[in-house]
Image (tube, rainbow, N blue to C red; front, side, top):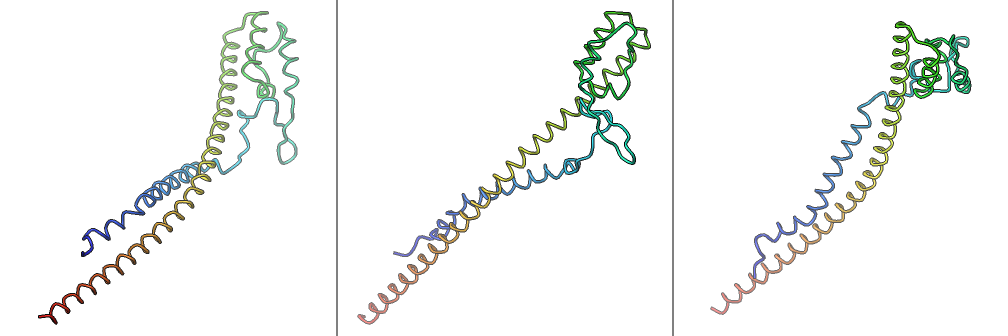
Length: 205
């Protein structure tokens, strides 16, 4: 019986699943890599600006550079010792050591002792914005860092799966080549048998 006309086509479908999965994971690898490389600022560890200086630390000039002076421990004393003569506009170095909660507590204590002028109220609003903007920037950096670390973990996992898929593809291609070789050998054998039968029939006639 001659081989089925779709014999080779049937064998060619064997590795299609692995090849398709390999294509999908390759696409994911490229996507994750682009996400990691798209934000150049993530590759640089730039020092925070003055408005983004972490609470509990204060920048002071030291020769040609800057050094961080930890003074956050003085903030509780500042809040606890508010008097009617305490300023509504805090020095910038002290302000940058404070959190939103400590700043609000300071103003709460101050406004319980005296009424603020319009200029002081404007100053209070400005200081609140400064602290909130700094804290928002810190939170954004933390979230971005966590996201990048998660992406790097996913990328490592995808690299591993990509390598496994390459092995599966190579194994599938080897199997396909062996099956094709067997099919070609069987087809050749059948053709030879058919020729021999024709020769025998001609000799008998």
